[in-house]
Image (cartoon, rainbow, N blue to C red; front, side, top):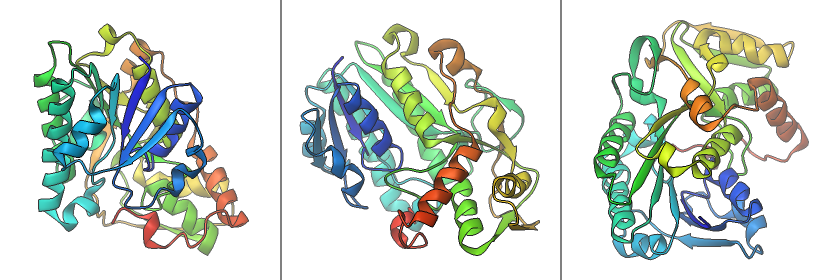
Length: 320
């Protein structure tokens, strides 16, 4: 396998994964709407292993042209997160469901053997106990419902030389070339650095976390695994040690930035509550995370204080 198409490769996760692929010598093509521009990939433009296509999942001709001839497709492209999906539900269905089905159909038609799909632990919704890949799914948002529906579509489509793999991602954090400040650890760190104060909404609900670079490493681990071991499989990507209750995250960030004021507000705006087990990825892929929340707090603080990130409250750092 040498040719990899990263759909959504200019995004928060994709801009890191794309670099890893190029550095490893893969012929890497990025297909992206570039809603936030191509700057996150600007340093790769001179690489002979890199190609950028501006395109839309909803355009059958564009998707077909990008998919044909690839050895593997990594499907990150989507409207990501509940706020972005709720802003225009019809567009969300068009992109996250119909657009994704277009990619699946193109992969099957052009005999692309591998498709890696970025799903979410939000599919678990509200549940008690520790959740595994075969636990029931209980999505409570349009974003998670469509991820579940695509999972079902993919698993049903497998076979006859087509081998999909699903990666359910924990809540992502950390520094990226296409930075986001609408993710919990990132926004808490930003407020701590800029205002010396952070607010936490909610308390006891569980949420697993994972660094964005570890997510990219998870996709690499699947790409480089024996295809027979990962075809038709679902992997939770994260670590057991980074399952946190929301209420402790303020104190966790403050432990790395002493002197920050933490205010906890009891009314939770986000009802998701799930404690996830991540052993399967370690057992099958040999995958372990390398980064902690403390690593992310430090790298984001440095980027903000040095001026490497300008206007962090601006709209380009948010999906909605």
